[in-house]
Amino acid sequence: MKSDNRYDDIIDYDWNQASFPGRMPLEQRAKIFLPFAALTGYEEALQRTLKQEIAEIEESRK
Image 1: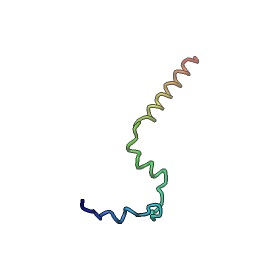
Image 2 (image 1 turned 90 degrees about the vertical axis):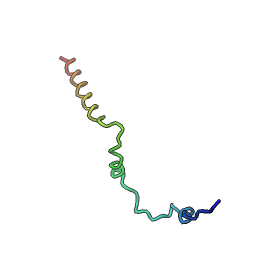
Image 3 (image 1 turned 30 degrees about the horizontal axis):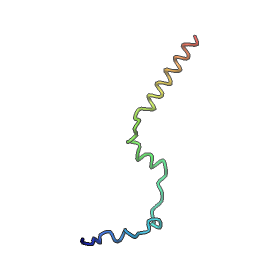
Image 4 (image 1 turned 120 degrees about the vertical axis):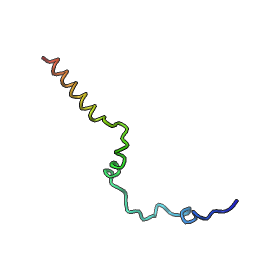
């Protein structure tokens, strides 16, 4: 088996001591994943249901 030395520079690299620019703020990270929201339209549906429930409660009080 032939030895492949392409990754020798990163195999023993101490990633804990790496000089990364810092962690991205939570708001910024959330924006990255926003387009992949599983429940697209959920907020609108929730608001619609809430309005319907309020209307039914007000109607039942008459």
